[in-house]
Image (cartoon, rainbow, N blue to C red; front, side, top):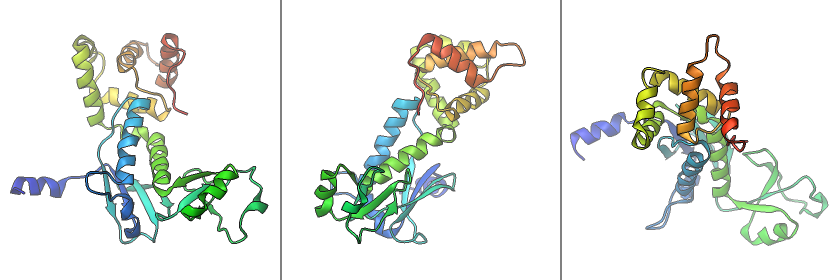
Length: 251
């Protein structure tokens, strides 16, 4: 590694981090030529967010944290903890629905709260999975729990994940398709900084940035509104629905 590369690595910062207790590091490890469950989950979540909301967020840093209790993890954004969770990597999680007859459950079954939605659940041995599946219960792996938790956190905090770098990447792609639209909009109609702020407000309302060209056109019309302007969220919803009654709004 060159001196310059070492310096870049030393000052590199990560927007999004996942801290694992040492016993959970196995979720990020993999056999040769394959990705670990957690790394695979990160790749999938980034793709799902791109498909659903229309942008790709930055890299995710996965590392162990000796200060964490056994079998726990944290998801952080800008070094702020967004959530905590606990999984047992060598077991499966059975989700205990409200309609489940609790008298059918083993008396020594330890009930816990599933970390994503807070529903009743229990960690079981793999050999016991069939028993619970036959009762109609969903049984998932620790990796699936982490995958779901990561996606829900990303979806809830999309407006914070959407940084200037993500916007510039979208504008670069859009310029390849229609440079006249970008030149018309920026900077005469709107600055990049204001565009970023408005798009963050849309994401906070769980509105998709797709199709981006239509979003940009609508932003241009919004900027033409007389002051005081209506709320951008309401204006955009009304305008986009006029073009597409099936506009993507993530629930």
